[in-house]
Image (tube, rainbow, N blue to C red; front, side):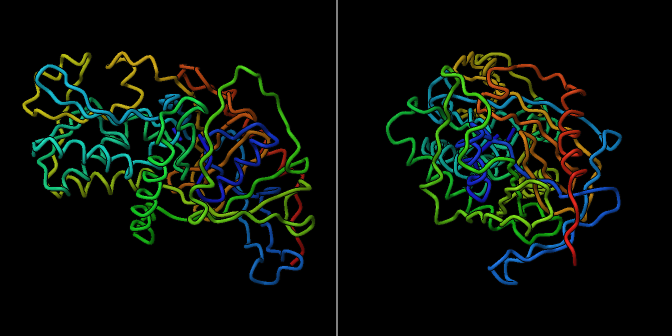
Amino acid sequence: MNASISVTFEIDAIRNRRGFLAGLGGLGLVGVAGCAPGQIVRPGLVAGLGDFNALPTLAPIRMRPDRISKITACLRPFRKAGPRLDVETVGDKTVVHNYGHGGSGWSLSWGSGTIAAKNAMSTGERDIAVIGCGALGLTTATLLRRAGANVTIYASERTPDTRSARATGTWSPDSRIAAVGATAPGFEAQWEEMCRTSYKAYQTYLGMAGDPVEWTDRYTLFDNPPGQRGGSHHPDDVRFVEYVERVRDITPRGLDLPAGSHPFPTPYARRGTSMQFNIAEYAHLLMTDYLLAGGKIETMTFHTPADLAVLKQKVVVNCTGYGARALWKDESIIPVRGQIAWLIPQHEVHYGLYYKGVSILARRDGIVVQQVGQTEAWGYNDDNETASRSEAEDAIATIAALYGRAKPLAA
């Protein structure tokens, strides 16, 4: 899933949390500023900044356990050295790897897929297999098809059933992408290339029917002044890289909101804007485009690399995500657990919220509520994919209590 700093306002939010909350670590911010039932938070002006910075009307969100439609958990495939993008020979197959993106799979899919597609096409083969139908597999297959290759995706699951479908859906290109001090020389520049390529590709999906990709406002709320450290950080905890400064030119800046200018009950708040993916719609669009372009999908399960021998293609792109840990016996993949409580959608809600380690994302297919913790180590090396009802209800209760303290601004 997605966990994170983000190359939109989300990056600023996470950097602040890393500075005083010890890290957001890759999950998206999004929710609503609801108060008591039926209240509408009225718009207000940011003091001294004029009408241009007026807060929009914020529709209330129904933060109640009886609104839960489902609870999902998934494991992000984190590698300290960053994604695996090398090429190796297995039997008579050339295998191009494209996995291990931590919480940045969707965000970097176009950039990472571009690298993988070039590696595959450079072999001279034009009949190519892609293993996996998640974010990386589907995007890489699309890029290969556009490059003129005959492409077949082999997977045991279609996209809606993969771990990618359980991701947060927020632009978070360096969310748990690598660990400080563990990357090879040149990785930072490679990440920037992937980031910019993906960012450019996603701009082409804005404004389309169903809003597969859209910009939304985010609000990060603090009880203490930004800059004061909160939570604990064990010296043995992993430290994730932060690359936001490399892409500041495509990163909308956050705006601190003066006390009294916003409807939230916390003394400190920040507003920004971030890109998000409505994964159900976006993945459906990707799949449709791929199949209309002549791409093929076949159901097949692989247990070991030797199983690739049954494929007719000589070039195979391995986009198995966390599944590569078992398939490729890749112990460098470290699970990072994430859970989402899905509340019934509210289509009048178009903004996000982060408070006390809880992140809320308003998507077209549901309100995403996540306990993301107040340290970077939240969910790290935890391979439990069993959904926890108590974790979900605790997260909802945290935000419900916040809303209960809020009062609408005067008109």
